[in-house]
Image (cartoon, rainbow, N blue to C red):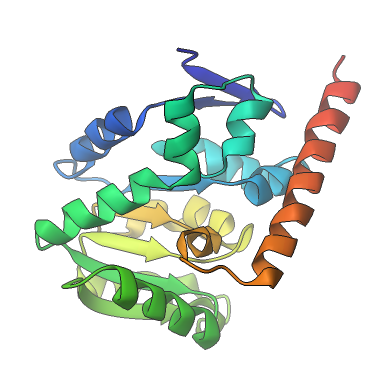
Length: 225
């Protein structure tokens, strides 16, 4: 199996779900913050034109492919890998395993509306999740120390973030070393892919992201031939 994905000048590991879980298990015993990031069509499209997003992707300790089109664009057609990406197997397995361990979670979102939607999703999909706090990016007025202090005061095992890029990338590049948690799991808004009945608007947005992603890949290849 192809072990590396190379797109728009970036390289990512093509781990199976089992390999991703083995990698994530090592994070629980480390002292420093470990970043897990879902890589979607939308995120890669942004990375084509944003250095901050590219740096944010590069600093992640584990990248999880969140769209099957990323694999097929890289020439990977393994039915197993396509299924794992489209069904978001890692997110389901990782969150379920952390909950069974009685790990604590802290939620980060851009605004109250985003936070409420995320909380509704989690409460519907995952029982017994131990939430120890949350924070809104819009509430910190650019003072990242406030967010860091809130996270550290709650002392969570896992931070679940649905912040948009490049705001999240800028924050983590500046503040990663200050955060006392085992894992920062960056889901962005891509967790919506897991909803049982996505809205028509969601599917329409996905079509737009696919088009932008393919354009970004082809434009990058044209510039670097």
